Image 1 (cartoon, helix red, strand yellow):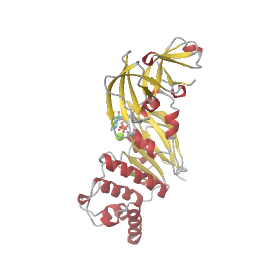
Image 2: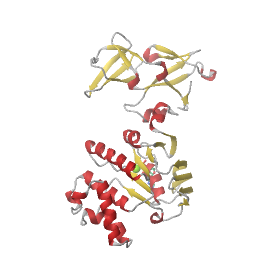
Image 3: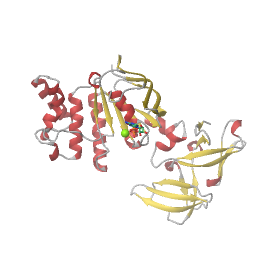
Image 4: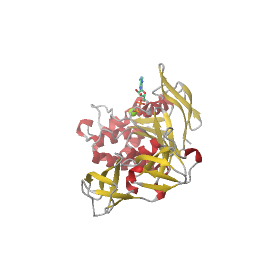
Length: 353
Ligand code: ADP
Ligand code: MG
């Protein structure tokens, strides 16, 4: 068993605290993604699990072992970095086997493990090449191979696809998902890309400013965000937010010139709230006259209409049909009531109705 548990984990650099008491359980064999904006502490937290950064407070276990004070080499983890960090003068085979060779593993065992990793990663035809003669995707595969060869209990990935072009990113994303299926090891994967998080994760951990905002399965975070930050971060294009005013038994949404019946705590009556609606849940009514089409973007199968309300709020709508609006046109919007999310204007916490 090699799940990972973090108990009130804290990191300070001098006086500056960057990780504020993280509690998290990652199950054995789970694919866990840390996602959040740049600077939120993803790499720091991952490097603490790897043992590359000391932990200022709290404890960490891998399986049954308390690893908080252990050296990286004792933790049975292997890390894959954004920069591949391959040895340029060594072949693919030598790069993958180097760690085992340094630890004086028998030659036959190294050969066998390198062969197994190269089979999984489809690197058989490249084993005698040097890194300079490989594409970016192949280099990243070698660095993943180097991790596999070590047979770790936990794989740690820090934005491994960030240096690849868009097409290759998608290809490698699928490869990593396949790798996880095949190996079944616990994996922690750091990214700022919510699409990578949604597609790869069993469990997503949304981080912001060194705190966990929410933990859950991808579709749970999408359907049931706890706060405005998670609602806006998960989903692409992002959820639209607009002003709302709570009445007796409805929320008025001035931007859409409509109101939606809600069952909401009396404490909110008469107050302003933030109303969230996803672009994919809004439907354009060409006969309406509520908002102006500012801009349209067509991607082929789907297009985005950027609308401006008479209140000056901006709203993105995803369109899938063949009939598309044109810039300058005035339109109305409709939506199902169950698609409306409400957030406290001050705390930004979800108001569940
Ligand atoms: P992320 O990977 O989410 O982009 P990091 O974990 O790299 O974020 O950084 C989290 C915060 O810690 C940032 O504010 C960053 O400036 C700070 N930080 C990271 N490394 C150091 C360091 N060695 N010394 C001081 N501050 C650091
Ligand atoms: Mg980082």
